[in-house]
Image 1 (cartoon, rainbow over the protein chains, first blue to last red):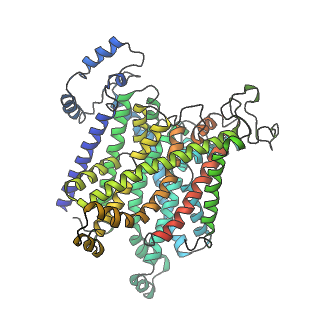
Image 2 (cartoon, chains in turn blue, cyan):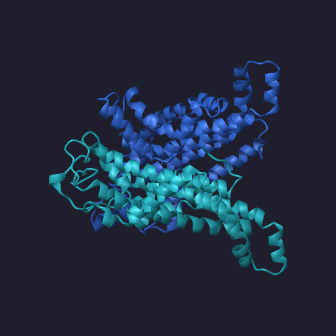
Length: 307
Length: 280
């Protein structure tokens, strides 16, 4: 167990080092990064001054080591637009807005998936099964932001403002973006629980449990579901990543003040310190989630060997 | 190609894909109007069956008075080109690196797979947004970004297959007869990894079309005034209360095309890779 944790932690550190390096080289893809780190209206002389001030005239490896030292302090420089520390801005948008949205979507997509997935398996080819199959096929085939637009069209325009289309601040504002973000992962989870359950329900111990005369509900929820849960954990981990990625675009659709929208809005103004800090935080969350998913396996299934 | 006649979904999918390619190719002949010509007097005309619509603009006009039907037809070109080109870039890169990784193993393999781990730590869309912010938005850059970020999926599958194929008897036999590494990779291993790669590539085209639409929606795709389905939806978002058709039709076009590709992908998977489970 300890060896496993150590290995995973080392791996995470390695990946983070890669992420930091990628962020460092991102603004250097086209050569000189200075124009990306000053105001777009800056004159040649101002750019030259900034180059000296930011230390961008030093050798590449000196800059790189310096960057590696400043990252653990969360120092990604100052936002060009708002003249504030970039990391501070990113964190303000991550918490609470993005976390709220992702958490709501995650809850929706996992909690609803359990009864729907079980019903699809126990009533194979029934109404729920067919509906979830169709929903999954369609939701995989449409851009999530278009689903969002259609929900806005329906609930905010056609139904005369039943739910607000844009902005944040109340639970009602959260409904449309959370549903939009949760829809595709929900359909996917339902299908996964279904196929997991179908497999598990064939097992001998399920037959034994039934033979003992246990209530069917008990057999399904206590014996079968627990063993069908493993793929769901993987997919939940993956769909959390999907949700963060999706948040970039869903936040833009609904003008939700999260960090995805912050990054997108930083692009036209070429506010690179904010983009760098945002990309880094996204990757950090991603790596952390993957680590948690790995650990959760061992809780759900003690047979999973940690090597 | 058994089973096609019995798989209604796959036939439907092929018809949709074929129809889209045909319409994109014949866009100049089929379009009712010039897709980039402004006509402010005609702006925000509804579809022909709505009150105030006319047959001159079957699916209505946008905020600059441009014909929506024509823009959809020309927009199909962008979706198809980006979808196919990016998948070719990703596929060639991923297959080549996967073969090298799985065949030679050792340091190259470790380095490539760790590089893949790092790349997978970025949500694709976030990475694409950041890179396009540096490179600038253009058709070539969108293809480049979506292509280069897609290699790892192929590399992992090909690497896994290669690892097991290189131990198989027919490869050992060819090696014993003096075949070079290059010959073995090219003639014996590559043909055997292609079936799963084809399946993955098909689904990737579908995902790439959605990714291109997403980037265009965020203003990072093909620069205006060239028509792209994602960019049309961005406009539809801003005029959702006054012009519902602007938000509806481009999305329906994406849904139909991507659904068609996914249906064909499901069928291909059943044919080429029976070990993979059907997702539906």
